[in-house]
Image (tube, rainbow, N blue to C red):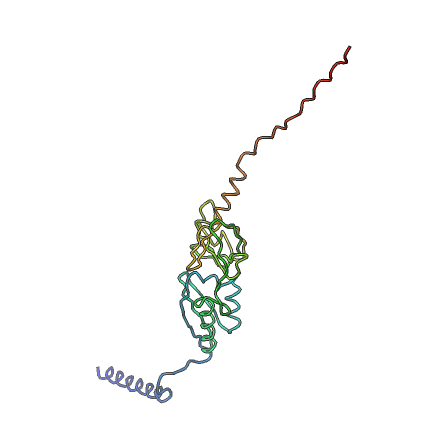
Length: 224
């Protein structure tokens, strides 16, 4: 018992000595991180602007990573953006850039203020982002404006795996089915266009036209 008590006492003395050396080396916690330690910043953007952040084929988000020297930028379906990098200043600049692009509604100081498409219009758009609930499309002829094709409006048949069904960069022909003039949210339907094409192919051809022929009068017999 005496040997065990002595061992415990010695270990405690040694442990306290080590702690004293650590306190002398680092009297308080570090106020800054080493340059090799990654940092993170988070912000939340409107889900309707996720496609704008990512860009066609991920072009915008890749450009942000390269321009600000970041490690990564991730965004979830709810609009939460996580920016990772090694430089605090670069992270702050990237966050401000994303705010200006998605929250303030501009990528150069101005939100889209052009005319909106009308319900029933047929439009083309490039897929800029694919989510579990649908695909965002940049509308051709409406620069800066995007629409959402809900997963239920992508095809006539049920789409079970949207990631396999459609990819960013694809061009889609869609019909405008909803326009919110206040939020400028545009609802699109690819299924409506496919149904129109299908009905056109299945409709019977028109009956052949009957061309009226003129009956020539019989030549009169010579008078006797």
